[in-house]
Image (cartoon, rainbow, N blue to C red; front, side):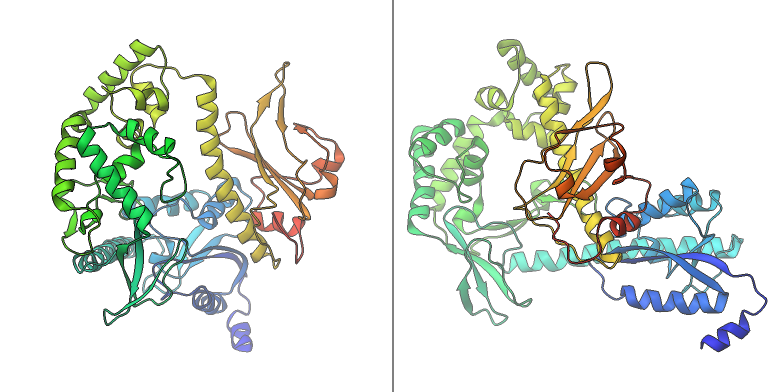
Length: 512
């Protein structure tokens, strides 16, 4: 094969190319190795030299988010760092199953504007910009998007069928209930304890009564609520005073009390699809007519008459929960005028105002609700919001770094207990110069310390610091210029993670 390729390519200019590989979590038909083999054969025939690889293994093709390989490729191409003139992809669906086919075209167009063309080695058309190829490519993009839609619909139908048969579809069982495994013949097997999952794909799970003390607590909550018409917040305080914990071992809140009082699983009804997130879109609350229900699916632990009386009382006490957005914001303004400030505890304590969690679900966050009524929260709230955002940045960075180390031939493991991967906000000194504080006092067995420094505004990663732990211990902050020793270990985010990983470690490093 090599000799044939050599003869065929004699006198032809060698084209430097990159390969983009993707395998989704849902579909294992296209393995990464199969794609590599097909692209290698195509490159031999075309006379291409594959000089770079971008890979998204186990990544959905529905959007660009969560696909660091494609993002890195676009960044390299548009920054001029790409040392290749074409990118070879197995087929249109591996490029992505974007629900808007214009999005798929947009990423390809960005590469073309930077002088890099995209080729699909397994398609029956040449991606040469001709009318015929553009038409076929548009059809293929539509087919790829439709495939995801059809698969989502088939998955939904299958899950809905299992719900109607009385089987559970994920989620914690809740206080007073446990998951029991049923084999493919419907015979009961073992009852799962906390954190256990079924190991056989064909097995199903149902809900069964849990420990007697938990069942007694659930029944007490319903009886007490019906007898006293006690509000959820008062009920939560009473349960906490009695020393009773939730099913996850935490103190009670207004929301957790509501989760018990309004959940039909306690009368044996299986309810699913109250909230859904299809095709990577934003999760939405579905109207009751879209819920999938199966009555008598489980053994009840609460009398139905008692449950129905509780629903009538709850609807009377919390009729404001069905109000419009405008009414919710008006209620929030009244609380602000009365208390002079807003917080989760203040909102939850107000009897004439919906719960803080409802504002979160309705408007996306409490902060957004505050903005809509013109309330500026204290700085510490901004700090909490920023902390949550930075946590997601940190999680994604860890995943990308571990993947890069693996591609570089190294071995890495993330140890949560001896965690020394830190993300640092960009702060300003009294003179306006940026600095980043870091905590290096924690004892760790890790060999390598990793710091992710954010740019001003804490929205974009500025760079990475990867250095031996022995050289970091004792340092409390970094400046824009850190001296030769530490600057040696700094890598800008534009540096490919693979090169960063190669510099950081060779093999068998314990990463924290």
